[in-house]
Amino acid sequence: MQAHQHAYKTGEVCPAGWRPGKKTLPVNTDVEPMTGRVGDYITLEEILAD
Image (cartoon, rainbow, N blue to C red):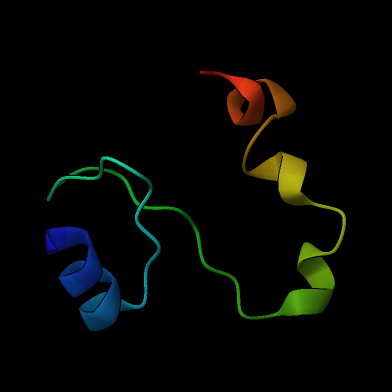
């Protein structure tokens, strides 16, 4: 619930298990520069990690 409230208030994205004071995920509303650049924010190893 805290992550939802924080995201609603700030527009930031909270990862699973987020707690107040922890890092949020970057939000970029400019879609074109983000195209093909997901690896700048998260690696394949992080995606596949259990």
